[in-house]
Image (cartoon, rainbow, N blue to C red):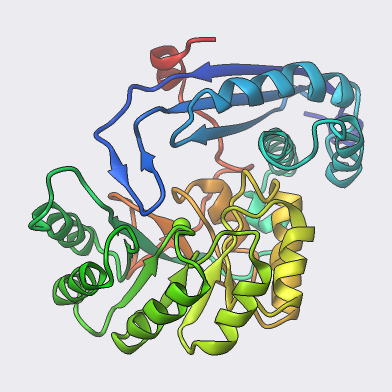
Length: 367
Ligand SMILES: [Mg+2]
């Protein structure tokens, strides 16, 4: 392709697929059941240079959300971006914020904005012949990863499955692990933490995640126990809007406070970070915004000495962004994957490595 042609790129089309994968056996955190109702929207943005940018956005429950995002992409995003130069992600974001203003740029609107931005960065990487982490200014070429492996399961009163899942994560090569807490009593949390440490060993990191369910007093009382037991971070102790509660907790506890998977945009993160409400922020690349917004959040955090970890299933988008930030400490993941000493190697393909396999689309497409 002629270099001149790439400089003149224009967006010529937007296509989506709605996928409905079958539900899996339910897994639970303290707040919700996951895997019970799934939905994914796949996005392709076409250009006149013959380069197609890909993104996908998945719902772990409330799968119909994917249909709403598809509708926003097809009816509200598409008319704004057609004819635009994909090399202007910040300009396009500003126009989309105006276009989507009536129903707002948080919630499902942000899922659509984020997917658009990720697809734009895929185009830019492919156009330059570079993986996106290099386009963003790479910091490292391997990323430490941890396994979210200790959920709540049906019929698991004796914690046999809980123990089996953590044992499997150790065998898969992970060096850091996370378990859910807060669904039942503090005694139950203690039992789970002790068992997990028995499996992974005291020299490995174990994080606990309460998925928003405590009030301030309960979070403080339980946090003191998690801290005493040697847990590495205490995630989402409070509902995401309780910024003042986060500030109180981060001040009162020595254990690292991690949160952010349910915050939208750099403005909500700036509020949390300026109040010193977290030691580690965990932007989700659907709710926090796409690559552009996520990198800005990570940079704000870096300026305040706050670390960053990704939220969600350890996909290539998260990996590309984390590799470009010096304050990134972990990618969240689960299941088997290629690792070298507990770290995931950088992607080598130009672009975002965000393409969805044709086989998967054919199998689950409903719209
Ligand atoms: Mg979490």
